[in-house]
Image 1 (tube, helix red, strand yellow):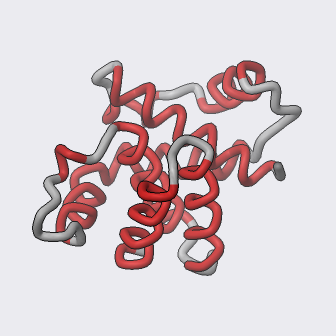
Image 2 (cartoon, rainbow, N blue to C red; image 1 turned 180 degrees about the vertical axis):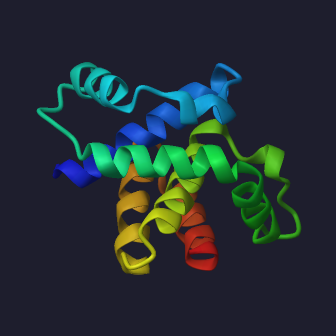
Length: 138
């Protein structure tokens, strides 16, 4: 994987971890360099793009409410936001956080990257779900 993909995956992990610990909005206080090194070590990554990692987390921390509202607004009528698991929420939030940080990144690139990350955790049903939501919200 390239350093940008590793940064995205690490950001998803950091967002999941922070939500599980109840500290999602405290992410702006991260020591990003130290946290990036921790994720690289735990995942046996040689290195990751610290700038992308920091931008995603910072934007999600600042904009969690608006990101979540955008996700909710684009769910099918029979889906509730609470039905989305924490890992899927982290993936969707990370994609939105990156879109805010780098609006020039092509939508297709972001969708492809986050769909691939989703495929590492889930089966086809969830992958299709993430693809459909990202297509709407990015």
